[in-house]
Image 1 (spheres, rainbow, N blue to C red):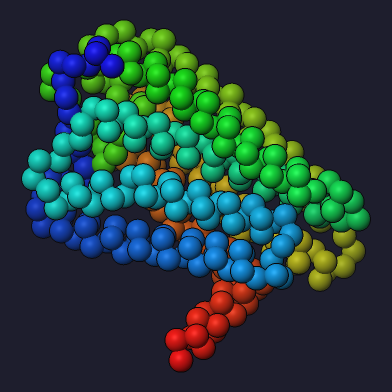
Image 2 (cartoon, rainbow, N blue to C red):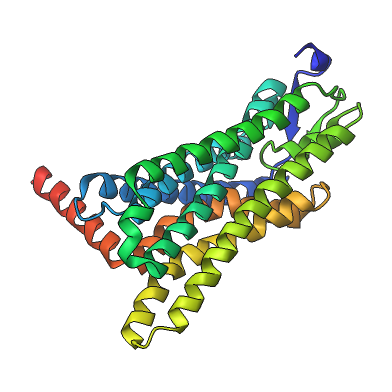
Length: 309
């Protein structure tokens, strides 16, 4: 890490330079962060405690809630600190660490969403073989495989970023550190870094997109062949929550990592969408559209109230 000894910290410009706007943004994102922690924690605890939520769908949903807790906690606390601080700096090593975790956890979430699409395919298209297709061992292997691939992908890109020489005055036009945001700060050649980042993202994105699109293609085909209106409605309801999150997450992430890094407001909005807003929306969308999750959360809260009484 001696290559960037000339500069010890970066400046995170954040979302606004106006003090009044920063105060408003602090309150807004503090509320979002609290809602994210509360919602995902409730779903995670409900799935762990309720015997009715033991299917693979809820197994993956529990891990998705855990990932969202981590994802939000990587970026939002530092953003909140900078909104009330005058310095708005971050050490270079801390910036690289944050960039690693943002890319690793974000990649894990993308892979988990793809795995959940395959789970819905197995449940709707092969209901009689669902238990065999989605065994406990396979589910655990898919989760750990998602973590392993995402961490390896992030580690490769972060180690390449560590070798860069950074200029004396490093200003990041964003609220957090992401690998693309580091490239404009480098005084050395970034062609290798940019190429590796692009292709690693393309390979991971194309793989997840292929799994999601093929799974939903089969799902929609199976639903259209159903003669029962009730069966169609139930099948659509089990997929609508997941499909909503997939569109929100993949859409903003793909646009963010394929567009040139410029620090534009659009770029920041896309980054906020997949790293801050989507983790907050996940528990809301899944709980509002899933009666079993709502019932499990209600039972858990009821037990908590009885305990305190």
